[in-house]
Length: 286
Image (cartoon, rainbow, N blue to C red; front, side, top):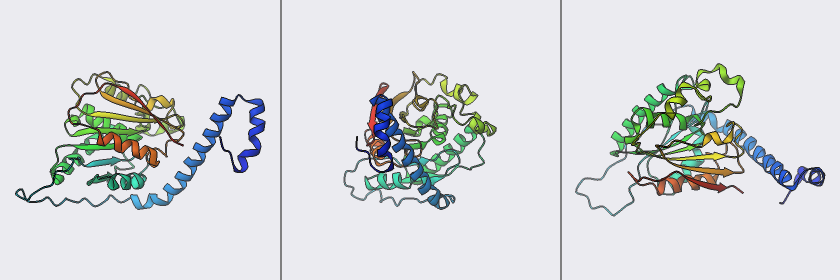
């Protein structure tokens, strides 16, 4: 391990009193925390730019009789942010997807006053119907960060959204409920993200025949998820790939280029109607 800067003088002391494994873990934690703070600072600068919802566009479709070159059919990608956030969190991910051939991408804002996951999921469904009508597509892919992933999952599982959502990618989403930040319980939507809430119990209910493919990224240094494994999906009726990310925190998940590559691969390899078994995956961030 290469250590530089102000941390270096403390490494010999740590090695004297701590096992090598713990020293490595503590250094990884320091790096992950420093990255989280840097991303937070950058996001605070970008946050005002994402407050206003983006202008909706209708792609220009060629005439039915126009000759067409064979192209890969990729559905629109819908990006859904997390709690007390907005679409600005997806600036880098959106650019990455666009550069790799995803032609229609929309970042949705839901109200910061949203107090119910069910209501937000219903509104998401109406947005998706509008997107499908404007683009002429039957399905969309969704990438949801944190609470955004939970809203999208509720739409898919409980509101019949599986016929519209081909792939749902979640980033640091509390599928099993998170116990972090107890003081936030005053907010009703935070209470819905706690283990055993009515919403999470509804998502634990049987979902036979669900057609959406789920890909859940969870990080070992995600301190908003407690325990961190709660961001993975465990449901016998769902097609799931759980991907463990090593070395970054909660805010880095929608920003880090290695995760963006994993998201692109998940979307590019998805096949409508394909049934796959639950399988683990891993992603190490240097």
